[in-house]
Length: 564
Image (tube, rainbow, N blue to C red; front, top):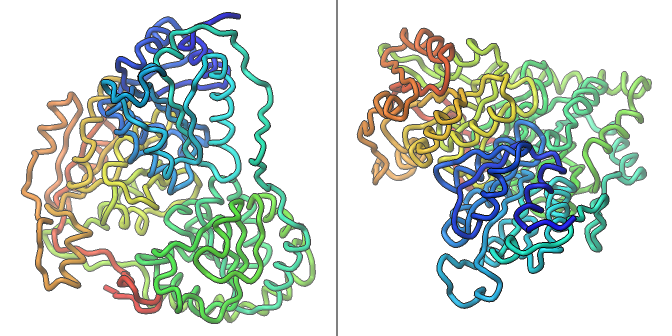
């Protein structure tokens, strides 16, 4: 079947099960947009900025587990995707970004709207392609989706010159993909698994440290089963929120810089750590030389380059965490050793419970001022913990992680590795498109929300009913907190005037706007906003002096927490 490159592009997406593309048109992709206009299978959502389009694809992928898709034009359209690509790359999110390019004969000639996006994006993509011939387009699209979604997931970029899209070729989408040099290891080595279980059972102070890999691998059930079989305490990273039920008695909450007192103390005093789908980043370890000084470490990850990268590992296991956890469960479930182990570690669990009781997550109420933590608690109460929560980056992100109890995976969407301000609103839109029957709430700050506020127009145009709750403290809160604690209160460029009026701005976009200025107004305003049809923006005026605690100062050990 002879088709133009643009027609091949649309048909390949349809055949791969893509239902929506987030994008922004331009001259280099005009052929594709003509083909999209004529098709009935692939929906396109017009975003207001290319960065927003990538974050929407990212949010779509995180909420659904499917690969998100973004389409932009050449030059500035392509370069505008870089922050979104880096965000997805740091958090291992499967997206495919298609960029237009100038005709092949003009590449390298500084043509109008030409940018070497393949070179620019190489450090922040799992892989990228420059399509040189129309006959290769269908195969490359198939490969791009395969690479993005297998092994350790990540973003793939496909750069498509305009003449490649205009020329014709036979449509030939491969049934299978086989790439020399790319063979992800899914099955953990049985002997390594057995060694890990022996080590685990020989110790008395275990902790499971679970990361985003649990969610990406759909292994939350296996994690809960192993934890239950051995009564293993579980702490999660920011990316692992929801991987283990927050209400489970064995849940310690998040660890790290703004983790719970119990989680940080447990990690620091443990004698064995089972790390699954996590990468020991600096926000988790604190001062590496003081991280878990008494513990043997078992590290399970599908990406071999993540093992031994930041900390010493005693038993490395390369493989899909779902497969490895299943093998561990088989070795311990129903065995008398498991029952004996639960008894042997009872005192340890008691110690952890004591830490949690002594220093729980808390805050000090203040008469007449709305505490941001209280707002998050009210969101949890009203949604019964069943909403999908997206966040911006900063204090709002940490309070959303600490005070909303996540019970299920794929319900907490946040830029963890890169810390991208402006992520939350477009990610929430993408999540809402992926999960139309769910309530999606973006917990935002008044600084972060303005990075991509233009995407409110996208939500209004397509009637995407996301709810945005702005914790408006009149500042760039997290930087201000550091200035307060470590720079003598010199608030250099972190104080924001109450500009804009977010309620009027929402109405200008065609959304609904609400505001709360007193603590007693919060439940009613949230209830009213969540019940309203269409996109809603809720401006909550919060205490500007409130800070995120616990906090481990940069360069300190996990036990050196600043507390409320």
